[in-house]
View 1: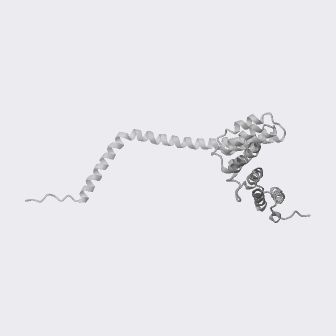
View 2 (view 1 turned 180 degrees about the horizontal axis):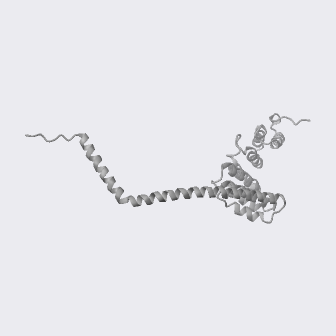
View 3 (view 1 turned 90 degrees about the vertical axis):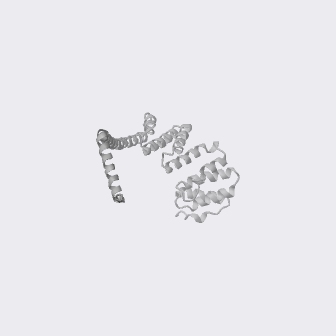
Length: 232
């Protein structure tokens, strides 16, 4: 009796490959038009993205120039148009332009004795996760300084706790507000130690360090060796 043919693995693979080629040929013929449309749409989308990025860059450059002009006007005492211009720029798609405009608007509000508006602008920056952390931290400190008298000392301490640590960029300002809050709680020793820590930190502005030395000493904490004495 004749033996059945030996169907090897190689033969099976060849048949399978042939079937796949036939299927691909049928698909390419059936959907060739759609594939061409897809390529055209992809190229159009890529071109549109490049155009939009260039447009955004040019728009950002223009807005930076506008911010600079507003600062020039404010420096020259021309305040009339500045609020509306800064409000418009604060809505910019550029986060740097937006944050700068908001900071300037808050400063202008303080110049015009509008503490409520200034506080709102600083709060807006501090609560916007889209802004870089240094922007938000600086705004939070300024917001807290404006709200300090109306806040409970414990709330001030809790809010600034992440920033009132040596090595943090805004340690000096955050620690000073925290120390004053500790004084309001009657914790003069803790406040004195914190003022001494400010005095020891060489990254803190010298004016703040010098003030901290004096306050620490009045609280019974010797921080006189934290910074050199001024030359005579």
